[in-house]
Length: 246
Image (cartoon, rainbow, N blue to C red; front, side, top):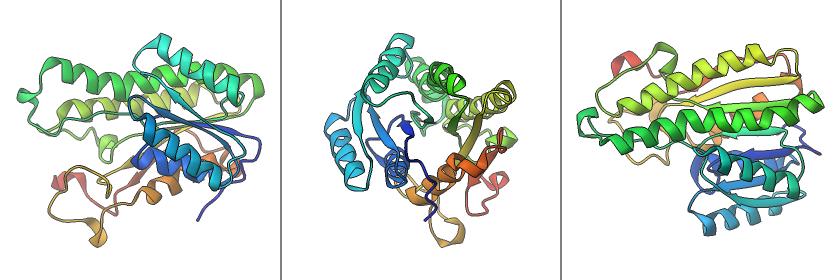
């Protein structure tokens, strides 16, 4: 298990009460970081995740509620984490709704929510985190994308999700360039299908779906002290799947 040395660091993972976000937060805890578990509605699960993070070695934990699509709520999230744990050194933008139905059947409010949670949430949280990271000349931002987005993957089913994830990769590359003199790296990890997903295609690459630990492993690589020259990159966790076959 890749465990970067994160003693003295503060990690905030959005949407970390469950699934991929929880695994990422727990890996940070096992690596010595103080961990903020963010949630929107899953307060009980968030408290359980924070307790598990403490058991794994996090020197301090907190839970923080908020809507990442609202600028004032994002400010409140970071204010609460900074008051409890200190400046956010590691930000993982994991929150993102999806709607696995044909694009014509998706109502407009759902379209908006998918774009806002995936793309605007990533932008707002990154913008709020940057001041503290720049002040200390050190920071790690990791955005969660989707495999195939590098090639602008499109498909009638779940279309707004693909749009948002492609935008996240564009934002990742832009922000990496904009922070190259600040000691901050910005990268992306893009899974295909994870074993906690709600639905699954017929064939799994390599005979299985990605585990949440597969995703956490890639995020840990980007958070490592020795990864300070790696920025603007995207790792696809897809087992060798070709998006052209979708």
